[in-house]
Length: 118
Image 1 (tube, helix red, strand yellow):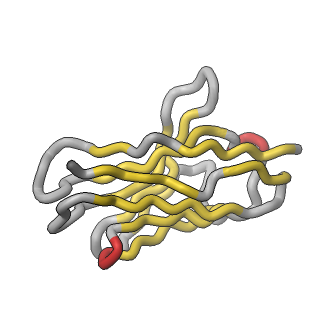
Image 2 (image 1 turned 30 degrees about the vertical axis):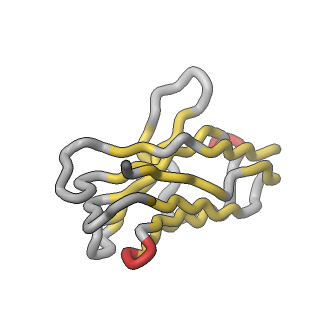
Image 3 (image 1 turned 180 degrees about the horizontal axis):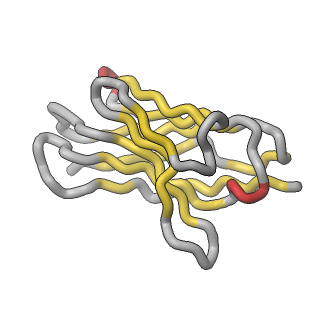
């Protein structure tokens, strides 16, 4: 059973930084694209960033130049460094992994709350 476990969320003031981590556990031979999504109250889940196994990354427009996604393939872990945080970044952040062991289903973490105060 593959599981994704996020950590690193919390409360921070506007302008501050947080680093999220997501570790995939279980019997894992390979993982495709990993990423972060977020969902604020009353809004749809939206893309934050994704990263391919080779390190190619893609960002949502609202976080470009402020957030950086990275991964450690040996540890099956993806990270999200969030700088210059804004109150509108407040949301539950979810980790996502695709093509795990060539399985077509998408795996999701349980979510971690990020709250940015003004």
